[in-house]
Length: 398
Image (cartoon, rainbow, N blue to C red; front, side, top):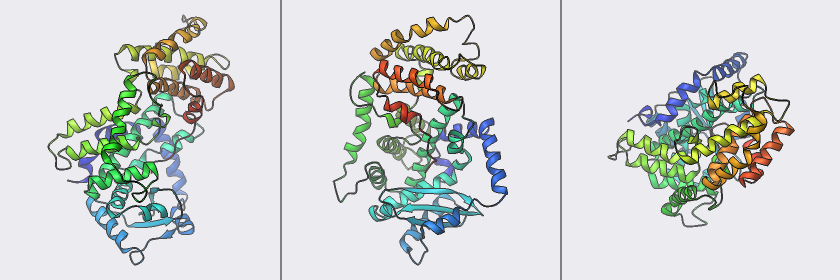
């Protein structure tokens, strides 16, 4: 079994779609021109700010790296580094001068056992093996020319599926699913087994509780960080347990069933209401329609650029000059009430999150647009702080 066999299907499908997108191609061309002028200095910076882990200095870690390199078919020379930090973290950098670099925080190396470290090592190398750096998500979302909302949504979704692929690469290297789950628990909690006794069943049970809350509007605390590039760790563990039961890891389940199961798990983080046929989804779409019009009209009227963005959500002919904008805006309170009655906290956050994408589409959020978003949060009983988080730029994959 090689690395390409275990790659998440949705990761690959979205990767192929995104790498051919004109905006992604444009940014990659800009990066290539910059790199042609000279190296970006990744190695120089690592040498200046961290400690290189040579085989003589860290023989056990070097051995782990060699095993992961062989399992995943990494062809480039690998250099390992450690930097001082109390936070558990690791990262794989885009290759430079035909050399690959992986960096670990000091606390991670000290707090993880050998099997847990091997999972982290394989995960980081997985990002390189699957060429995830070919989708420069940080450049796209932090650049001066912001992506349209549909592209932004696809970037969010792809990055989460990319993490699933990297997790599978890590599990393939570790070959110890309990250690994999323990590593994800440590990364999520910041705790080590020296402090508490880890329970895999209790950890994964959080996903079941999330699903129950999602079916009962108004119950439980909303998890605003679901709208991130990384799946919530219990979701990742649940996805890996499905992987463990599949033929890809030596189980009996088919790859097709695995991918359907993973998509079901990650659907908790995806705005699938745009296509769903339920009454709740329809209510959410109706509110989104009115909300996007209100956001777009909040600053000097709806521009042609904003109309193009609107079409990304609802189709080319969804907006017409015959629409009575003021009357549509007057329906927002009623539509928000319907969504509040039918949808969970998480689903209401999804609608507000998509409105935030609309507000950002023209390069920044104007005062009038922010006022509309704040009013929408009030109507949906969502903390205004969620808007601040939704408007923050995303981090690169790590």
